[in-house]
Length: 182
Image (cartoon, rainbow, N blue to C red; front, top):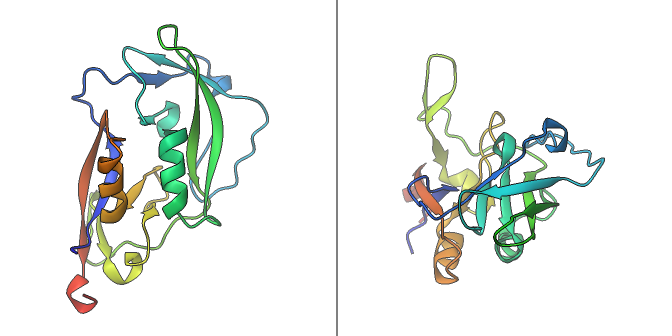
């Protein structure tokens, strides 16, 4: 089996997929991967302009997953480094649903520094990961400045099989040095 890795992200062209927002800055937790999260109240968001998806990008670019996708990701994630923080999402049209913020307690060291393409400000333009660093990972992040969610081919296929991909898209991540390990 060929091992690939994918960015997991919302599909902006899926017109039926809704957007999860929060009009009040006080109901948006400050969540950054690699940092401890303090939950001091219940957080409630709103679904607007469409339907619920299994995965949404929420306020402040946090990754939100529903119960079904949470269960799948939990079965593949390193439990000591990934946590799922509950939040409620209201919808006037579809009712309320429980979602979970996918929070990585650490930033995974997976970037191939030599082959990744960087912009003038040091931001990553084209991510390249080193296969030696990701070969045993199925759910991981890669960058400290964004809350990214990356998955393996195995998880990608399971998401498709279970039809948990409505409103999402997958971007291929370049994985270098695979030939040394396959």
